[in-house]
Each structure stands twice: as structure tokens, then as C-alpha cells.
Amino acid sequence: MPRESASARAERTQSICKRLAAAYPDAHCELDFTTPLELLVATILSAQCTDKRVNVVTKELFSVCKTAADYVALPLEQLEDLVKTTGFFRSKAKNIKACCAALVEKHGGEVPADMDALTALAGVGRKTANVVLGNVFGINEGVVVDTHVARLSTRLGLTREKTPENIEQDLIRLIPRKDWALFSHWLIWHGRRRCGARKPECAACEIADLCPRTGV
Image (cartoon, rainbow, N blue to C red):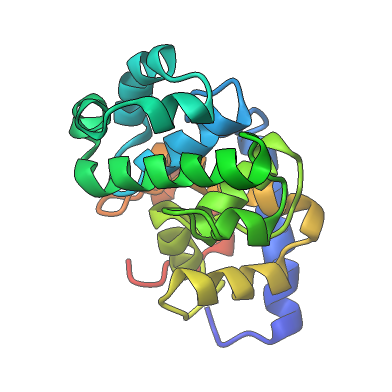
């Protein structure tokens, strides 16, 4: 595609959103959870790990720990053992315990529905906070930028930025606020089901005519 204006990129982004919404009407967070705390812990564990693996791990973990106080009381070694197969298990276990200790001490054991309060917790950055806010509380505070979102946003020519923080700011300017949480789900589902990193299915792609195939 030739270099496009900001208005043309915004219009193309709107078309991409409509197509992906039609292609994935049931798009949702694929981490298993029933409470805000479960999603918070699952998202911390999902760093450098697949959702499928996290869901296997949390099935047992959530039967052992049901409250923030439970995580605080659980010996660190036992928590490490429970989350070991998600990778980086020592730092994840340490962050989860510190995070839950702060929840108990400062928030009555409840997960706050506030970006600043969430990102003040151990192991919680904007990505994790956006996951929790968007999927539990229905608050569109930002756009979740994971590996799929970063990769597809670049491939689709929606950003030239490299860091998740800067990519998020580009996407926020292009996407209506009401779609911020859904947009992440659409791109993640598209990345997993159609637009693979190495072998994208361009011939069958629902948005092929809207994609400059940057880097392909």
C-alpha cells in the first residue's frame, strides 16, 4: 500500500474492526477465570506462556487459593511448584504473593478497578491492568498489547512503534474507546486462527484487502 494519511489509516482501521467483529463475534479472553482475582493471577502467569498452559496450571491453583489471603498464607515453595510449568516461576510466584499481600493490606483483599492502583501492584503492568479492567469490570482504559496484538498491528500498518506502550498509544488514537478491549481479542483470535507469524493464511484472510502485509 502507498503511504496513507492519518485519516485514511483511521478509516481503514474502522473497516478492519468491522470485518474482525463479523469474523469473530464470540471473541473473548481465553484465560479461564471466575473472579477478578483469578484473572489477575492468570494474566500474571501468562507472561511468556500460552493461555492453554496457564489454564492447566490454574485449574489446580485456583482450587488451592481462592482469596488473596490464601496466596499470602501459601508457602512460597508450594506456590512455585504449582506454577512451575508456566516458566519464570520463581519471579511469578514472588510477584503473585507480593501482589496479593498488597491487595489484603490496601484493598481489603479485593482487586481494584483502577489503572493506577492496579499498576502499583507487584507484577502488574499496563497490559495486565488492561486485561483485568476490560474483561472483569468492563472499563476501557487502554488497549491490551500482547505478542499477537503487537505483531498484527505492525503487519496491518497501524503502527511503526516497537514498544508495547507506544503501540498502545497509536492504537488508542485509531480505535474508538468502546472497542478497545474487543480490538485486542479480535487481533489475538485472528493471530491464532488465521494470521500466524510464519505462515499467514493470506488467501483466506477476512481482511486481506485492508492489509499492507508489512514484513511478510
